[in-house]
Image 1: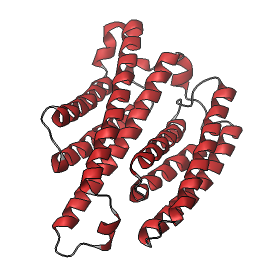
Image 2 (image 1 turned 180 degrees about the horizontal axis):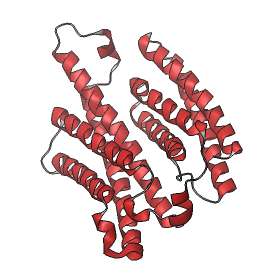
Image 3 (image 1 turned 45 degrees about the vertical axis):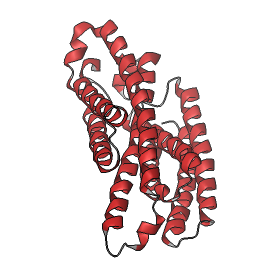
Length: 272
């Protein structure tokens, strides 16, 4: 990253840390009014995060997806955006306790900065692939919220069955609402990942011929997409809800995370 991008990103990081602290205070001490400070800090932080991304595009002439640092920053930005949308829809503060630490850590990684990687400069000079990466990260961000909702669902269900629910039980959303969060964020993530795979497949097939299909990362990405296709089918056609859906959400997100780790910034067919 160049200096201006890092400068604005570190301002966003400071604001995210304030938001994280106030979110923890809100849930642990049951002080709902404190969450207004958390929400304000996160929202202003998101604005400066957007400024950081804009500065990167302005200074480099390319979207910030050329290194692990930049992708971590963009993922944090997208997760925060999806979280704010979910909060606007459902108004549950406890989701922030699970989301904000990850946002903070990803932004911290992004703020370390790194120059553009050679593979991006040499091979990926097309907006098509930048769009693919952005869509896939948006899908990953939405699926992360699906994962969080699934984890919260299992925690809440366990507490409901317990004879002596712990205090945190009273701070979690109702099971029905958590199921709705899973459904809506899954839909957003599935659409984004589908579009990202379509864009990547068309571009790769037109430039590398049939060799692109044998890339193991592409195969794993399609496997992850297939998991979420099965999740959508299970909800819409088979009527799966509750615990089954929560377990499926967790498994699907783990597949998406594995794709990102294995990918490490470039598919096999993109190497110089």
